[in-house]
Image 1 (tube, helix red, strand yellow):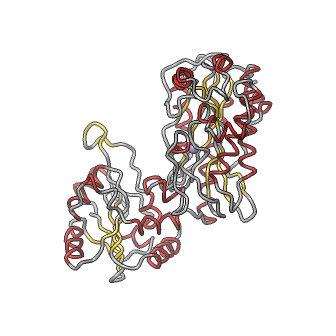
Image 2: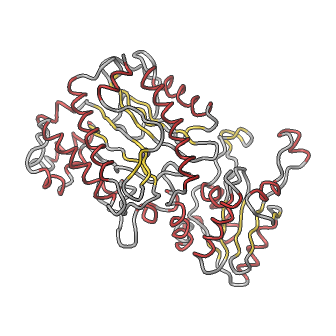
Image 3: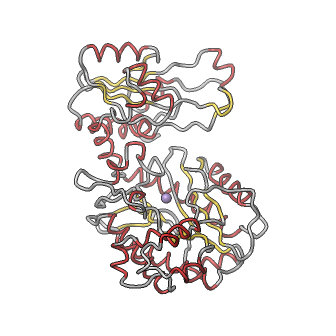
Length: 461
Ligand SMILES: [Mn+2]
């Protein structure tokens, strides 16, 4: 938990951004895996954490702007509960630590909302993403679950985004803690991975590092010798010399600020010649992109810059032909780079993604693209000091996609399909770091994690 004044100030600022009505903050519930009491690891809603800081299930908070009230709803433990859980700090004590003085039982919320609706007060809520959110909105506000997302309050969303997007010093310190743990996970991956291990065996070790340092992983670890499958997870598959292993893994701290790093290594001691050349293309693209990140530049343009570097590299490999700028205008890069260059990062690894990518990564004047490749770019807007984001270019040779484009002879004026065939089973490479936009440029967050070919191979010796 941060200081009481942090939470008081955040709520005060939020209140000045919204004219009136009632703000509803849905906390998260415990969630049963296979029966009610055998639960997934609890994760509180990030916006709830941002304004109320209490990392506990079954809480809801209300800010009544019209009557200047802040109320936390939740039930204190009964003696029956304590038999199983042991004594815990009371909700009222936790509430006091974040500057909330009014705590009511959970059952009092329904009537309060009913009352508000009958008085004609607007109840603002954020887009739901868990089953329980939809049920609560239906019960309390009579919102049809199918319409709940579109009925979410745009002014509330925009107000939250306008605050959570700018990380304060104390948040940056917490994010750097998460990145430092993520670096430790990657150092273990880069030093200890050996042929014959399974993907799961390695991923399991990395998760234990995150838990051992007081938090957990910030998303399921991607650890694979098939880096071209963007969101695959570790399998019971023994890895072999000659392959590359891609690890996309990050930790979150006990306070739930996140890190998100990716490295790609040779399973043996060294990259093959072709792996090395392709790796260098991705690294050059990443370094060019990072160097370009500063206040004022559209991240969409940084994405385009990275795409250009990737296509220039693929031209050197003989796979792309013709004018690179023209090739980019035709989206040739999406054959190798189908996703976005990066995203905001904070209390969520894809920060505020549940609030809507258009509101978080774009603006009223900059609408998110819908074309293949561009639709996966979560962040496009102009960068500002205080933004924390990832920069993660990659080259992904997806056999099914290559076959599809080849069958259609798609953009054949720019692609040497004969040459491309040699890369059909190349797999994929990604390199990802986290940075803070400063007044003059940017700063890499966390301890340095090596990434040059020589340094990576140095750890593999
Ligand atoms: Mn990422």
